[in-house]
Each structure stands twice: as structure tokens, then as C-alpha cells.
Length: 514
Image 1 (cartoon, rainbow, N blue to C red):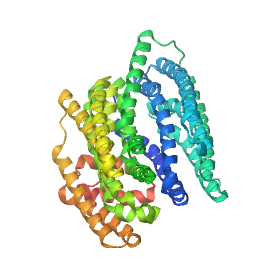
Image 2: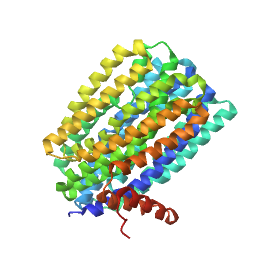
Image 3: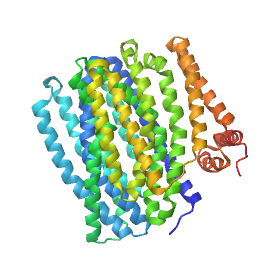
Image 4: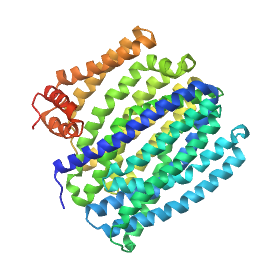
């Protein structure tokens, strides 16, 4: 059944709101835990912990994208077609497949930890290995909720699990348990998050009609899952800090791991706002393929523009204020992370627009183009890491990672624009880019002109004001943007809604309809 553009926009706005709550909480918890942990542990010891946690996360991610990606794609498609029985069958099939793969991967990770783990961090390593199973299993119910375009259902689990993690970090630091206590807290919150996601999702899935899985669909599920796993291997090379392995191999300074990991963490937090939009749009793109595939090209065209509208000011602003931000948050011992963060934040712009392109091609079952582009990007990333890390350390890793991301994003969107004859609004994109340049210059000049503690606030304010004024001056927002963004302002508290709508009036030159 076709669904109107306005209805899609309302769904995206509602899901963006709820996913935004999760994201804001993630950012708050990350800052409330990573900063005191970094200050207490120091850059030398924190490097190994960052590497171990990354390996654990990537192990779970590697094993999670096959079945969960298939669950998200096909549950959304069949719910869009109003075929709830097949949606339920997909959930049950992918959950079993995920259980088998997670048990196997957990066993392999445990053997690797026993063989290669640092004896002085044995408990930490085993706890991280123990997070793989729940970390993989929680992805099925989480993706099912996204497929149902119900981001709200994932919020309670996030809130409780993040509270547990925050308490574990602060209690560990106060009691002197340090990384051991933190790793135990991570293990606990992963299991709590799994059960809180699974039980409610299982309940609404059980309300759907019970049907056997169609044999043809079983073949499609397997094919899609295999491609997703292969794609995840490539994504780890390009998007998920595989450069930490290269740094560990090619650099003898343990601080380099910390500087690169810290920079990537902050860049990922800045990219979370466009990711809120991307995840919501991705769920609607997959469902729209079942409802009315003819509207996909319009959704893709809007996705890239609004992703850049959300991401450019945050990422370029983060790069510009890095000389003030790093000393204020982490202290003088982390000064080596400043140039790494400046590069990593700029390089994260392509990563912000990669996800909607991937969702578009997944919805139309053309993952081969994602694989091709990511192969080229991964080879470039590893090659540049090998050449640059011995000379430049974490700066070389940031250059390699950013170059790979740029090639992947440009190749993917170029393929979509060429194959599907999608015309982007290049004039509006250019005006948006010019506004981001003005923001960068304003924030950078202020951040460089004063001491870090004095400069940080004024630099952020200068960049924000410059960006807003530039949007108005260059005419980067239109009346159509007013109508779409007014759906989002309608979700904020009533006492702030008038101010937000007035700002939209001024930026677009037309009043928001009542």
C-alpha cells in the first residue's frame, strides 16, 4: 500500500526523536565515563584496553551483521507488505542462526584470549570476550524494532544498561578496581541490555500470525546474510578502526593507540546526530521497498542532503575547536591527540553519508556495489597505513582511514547517481558546504587565539553563530525544508516550539504552517 511523503516524513521524525534520546544518552555516558577513565589510567595503559575492547566489539559486530541485517531488511519488507506471518518467520529463523554463530565466535575468541592475551589483563580480556554473546544476540530484537519503525521500543534497554555502565566505571575508579571493575561492568550491562531488548520484541513478534518460512525466502535470507558478513569484514577495514591493529604492529609508542582511539571516539560521537537521521531513514527505506519502491529515489536524494545538514557543522566544528577541546577534556598529556582529532573529524564526513547509500542498495538487494567500493577503500586504507604510520604514527592512521572512507562514500553515491539517474540538489549542497567553511574559519580563529579553557566556549559559540548566519545569507534552506523540519519541531516541548518555529521562519523566509 503506497504511503505518502508526508507520512514517511512523520515516521522518520518520530523515530529520529526516539533514536535521538538513545544517542544523546550514549554521548553523555561516553563523556561521563571516558574522560575520568582516561585521566585516571593515562595514555600508556589505556591504549591496550582500547585495543582489547575494540577487538571484542568488532568480533561481535562481525558476527552480528549477517543475520541481524537480514532480519532488519526482510522483517521491514514483509511488514510493509502487511505479511506479518513471514515477518515472524524471519525473526525466528535469524534468531536461531544468530545463536549458533555467536556461540561459535565466542568459543574462538576465548581460545584466542587464552593463547595471545596479556597475562596482566587476563580478567579484563575474559570479560570482554564474555560480552560477545549478548552483544551479538541483542542485535536481532533491536533490528526487528527498527524494521517495525518503532525506535521507541529500544530506549528502555539503553537507559538501564548505560546507567549500569556509568555506575561501574565510577565505582571502579573510586574503589581502585580500575580496568578490572570497568570490564566486569561492561559484561553485566551487555547481558541486561540483551534481555531487556529480547523480551519485549519477542512479545510483539509472537502476536503476528505463525507461518512456516517460505523456501524461496530462506534462500534469499542466506544469500543476503552471506553478503552482509563479507561486507562487514570490509567495513571493519574502512569504518571501524582496524587502524588500531596497524598501529599496534607498526608503532612502538603505546600512546599512539590512545591518541587515535580517542580521536575516533570523539568523531563518532559528533557523527551520531546524522546517524540518528540515517538509522530512521534506513528503516523507512527498507519498509518503503515493501510499500512502494518507486519513492526510494526521492528518499535517497533527501537523505544525503539532510545528513550533511546535520553532520557538517558538528564534524567541521569539532575539527576547528580541537586545539581547545582536547586539553580541557583530557589534560596536557593528551596533546598529541589534537592533530589526530582535527584530521579524524574532517575525514568522518564521508562516513556520515555512507549509511543511507548502503541502506538504499540493501533495500534493492544490490549489495555487490557496496562490496566493490569497500574493497577498493579497504585496500587504500591498509596501504596508506603501512606507508604512513611508521613516519607519522596516529596522524598517518587518520589519513589512511579518512582516505578509505572518502573513496568508499564517493564510489557508492556515484554508483547510485549513475545507475538510478538520481539528480541531487547541487546548488543547495554547495551553499551548505560554504556555510560549513565559514563555521570552520570562525571557530578555528577563536580556538587558536586564546588559552584552551578560555577559548572553548567562545569558539563553539562563534562557529554556531557563523553557521546559522551563513545558512541565511547563502539561502541554504528552502520552503520545502521548512515543512519537513517543522515536523521535528512539533516533537519538542511546547514551551520551546514557538522559538524553534520562529527560527525556521527566519532561516527559510516563510512562516511555518500552523
